Length: 405
Image (tube, rainbow, N blue to C red; front, side):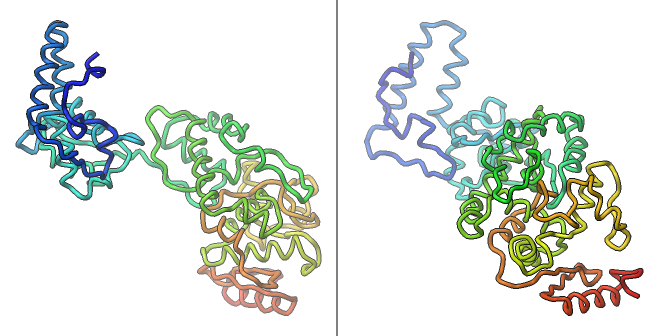
């Protein structure tokens, strides 16, 4: 094999992948006679390949384009689709462009990329480029966001799993049933089993809820429902690792990571503005883990509405929920007359909600209420504060009915 022969050219001219990583400037090693060695290498390759037969010309052409620098002059024409994969070096990208008929040689692309200080910003993804274009223009297209083919889908913060399946199904044409089936085993999707441990004695199903991180995802072609959900779980694990979520929950909050995740999901469901996420988390902790409230219960409506949505029913505003609905003993997500957190998360929280759940501000609040139409939250520590907040809600038209009598 030619790769096993020492053909005499120096390290800088090998075109090795390790020497042309994105953003790295290729350096010569200071040896003289590099050009001559390159010519010698080409001659040796020609001799060796010539003995193999006519079929070797394609292989020789691929080898040659690493050492010479032919380049197209024009802007190119037509259209080609190339993919930059995770871990690709400039050589890898150049090879992909060359194979697609975009650049005239891999080396032309490498030199153009080395000359462009922004080339290190080339992102993973698929790009629309033109055939037979100047290498420098190809680099510029790979740096242009408009050239990137994005089959992306955005999952908003606080979206519940069932709604996520609908969004993904519309984007990918994969049936909702496939996503539901894939979600039945969160551990198989990449959720570490320890995440379902909790120290409050509550028992519930191993639900995917909470682990589908809300973000914009570029869905790979032909991806399966399982692969897509796994990608979202992986992003959740990446974000929580960056936040030191597990350690902070255990060491600072003295609760299990799953309890902190449930708290984040409730804060996300209850808050309109990001600024309130940490404060709502504090209220939840004060209610459930201290004696500040009249019970160690949540008494929140978002959990009731989560259960309704799981059953295919429409959620209701707080002032129209009946006592029968609030205290339904058959509802596993009942928070009135039932102590502790919910049995699973009730939404998929974003980064700010996760951060707030492990970094809540100090405070003795046991009430939070949305006091105006803008979603402004008010907080209270006693019954007098509660009545004051309730009046603000009534005055601003957020609350009506007997509560405002």
